[in-house]
Amino acid sequence: MRIKFLKYNLDDLSLDETVNKAIELINSKKTHQHVVLNAAKIVLMEKDKELADIVNSCDLINADGMSIVWASKFLGKKLKERVAGIDLMQRLLEVADENKYRIFLFGAEEEVVKAVSDKIRQKYKNLTIAGYRNGYYKKEEEPEIIKLINESESHIVFVGFSSPNKEFFLNRYKDSLKVPFCMGVGGSFDVFAGKYKRAPKWMQKIGLEWFYRYIQEPGRLWKRYTVNNFLFVMLVLRYKFFKK
Image (tube, rainbow, N blue to C red; front, side, top):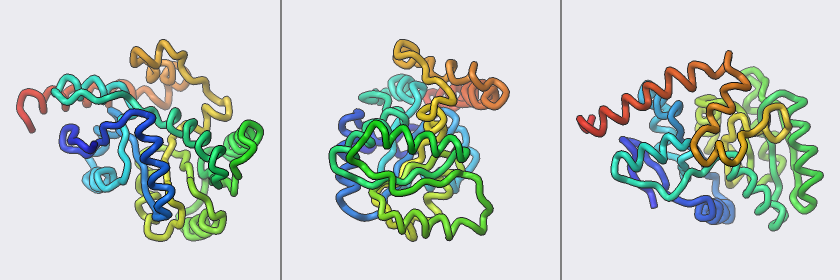
């Protein structure tokens, strides 16, 4: 069920329901864009109307951060659960293996995306890694990248670079891409490749996964997890008490 969180669209779905919806979108054979919401992205959307419009237009929108789940409850619209992008990616790989889907991996450093490809091939024998490419390129190379992805005849493309770049890229080429399910997975490739560790289950459950990620890269993530989290809390409070 699609609801409004603050002024943005959000699908109130469990992980299982999200997987079923993704399968439905894949089987439609039309191009669909998936996106997740977290505190940092909400703050970006407040400043960038184009990004907000792109997110609102996506076919499937999940609450990735526990901050969204907590805030929804505080605002009187309790969500079923958090659907982390990396958990959804994992489940979709299982679905791809069961259905012999073709997968394309795009993003991260060359050694990282290659490692992700190798690990997926080793674990899932029935799906096909139809291609992969690192996320370092010049703007003028984008049409060639789209051609490469299309020629792979993939069912799913996972895009592993940061927001808002992945949202803009997928939206810009949504009419050109011939892949049914396009999903931005942010830094999930780094975790799959073993470059960074994911938080223990107990930290995930109590909403401290962000802190575990932060202590691995404090120099790069301090603003995202301090300034943006503070701005997000202020935004939710303002909406709660002033409806603006």
